[in-house]
Length: 348
Image (cartoon, rainbow, N blue to C red; front, top):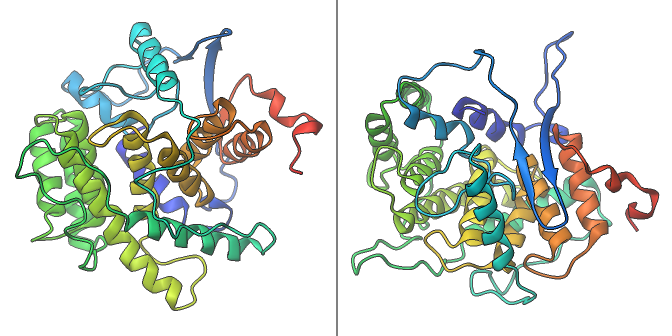
């Protein structure tokens, strides 16, 4: 999946049913994920390429194609991105996930006033409640590990209103994407950095993209602490826009919903793996579940995995089945999960 697909993913949350409208007669094939598993491990199997993928001028440009993925079978570990076809790295990532399981229900990265969502309301009301949770999560300071005494505060920009992409920003973002896909990673990351600058454009989407580039070292030295700073800023800036929409009575949120969901999902990945912040399974599960209920199909799979494996709390196969079903309905199918459709796993 390319960076352009990531931007499409951001826009999905603005439509009913969490899916973009398609042109009449256009059939959109579902996305399949092939998993080879045994009792203790599972591995994502990628189909071979037959030359239909866009050509890049440098191998380093490939990571952006999967930058938003963090499946338990295709996530990222350590300071650098590892190609998903490397069997050893997949095993390592799976083992890392298992070591960080926790049955604790407490977290220093969750607000104390996080409200429960009433399941009895209508769909719009539930979505509004989940978005309120997202805005509260975005405003909670994280326990970032400082890399130096001069590490910036993650929420230093939360008091100012974030800014969405204008026409000029969109052109610049698209240009940065083209540079990245052409292998010009340093130039691309510098462009994202300028757009993300809180003293300049303060663009929420660029803050997400710049944070990811910093996290994985695309065209720059990896810096997990600074990466989570920008991801946190993107979440907080988007939340300020969405909070205004909710206060105005717009149950589906405002124009920054896509940016907020992307930021929440990527912060969940940081909390899960300890990228720039202490590992926090409890908070990671809450972040995944919030993004899942706001339409992110990847977060649906991750929330399901958390409930299936007891990551960040108790196991619950009924809730896991619910989220796996949602992911499948949103085009993110995992083969081998036929158990989720058994009658006994229907919602109680």
